[in-house]
Length: 221
Image (cartoon, rainbow, N blue to C red):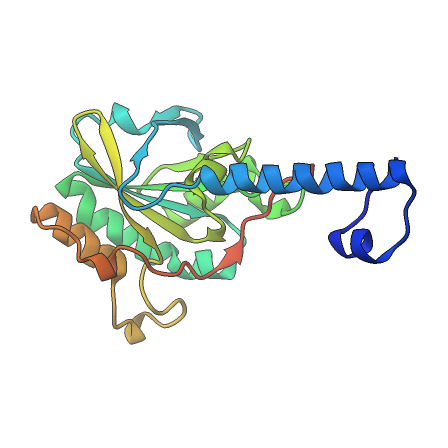
């Protein structure tokens, strides 16, 4: 059975069986895309807890942080220049907010077959060389990135914790300048976390920004 693109389906002549096969393929693709889009977290959504392997080999779960008030979850990687540019800023965020019980959690979801420098072994090396002061988790199946709707590195989700409930409070970028720290005018993540720690709502216009960075390297099906 042959498959085709939507354009081919419209312009080329197929016999009945080929048209049926093509239509089924397109329908299945749209259905899969719809599932992925519907699974993405939005601001205000409740997040399911997850457990991923840290670079030290231990499993990390968000709800295991009993004292936590929230999390700065960052989808990142070893190899993306944007992610590398933000590593020191992530260390600073962890230094500032961990004592206030807001924890930085970094997650690498890149497929190491497509990005050789993003293997678990390379993650351990990066963590040690950069002296990360936060967990660096391996999303081997890429299920967590898909569930969150992450598509860039870095891509940030700030989660507020209340009891056993984790709720998305912010989605987007760390700040407004990837390359020049001294040129940053808007510290999106810091501003959002400061609001939450102060017990104030994040202004509606500051709850979403555009994540800028490399695309996550998805596993080929």
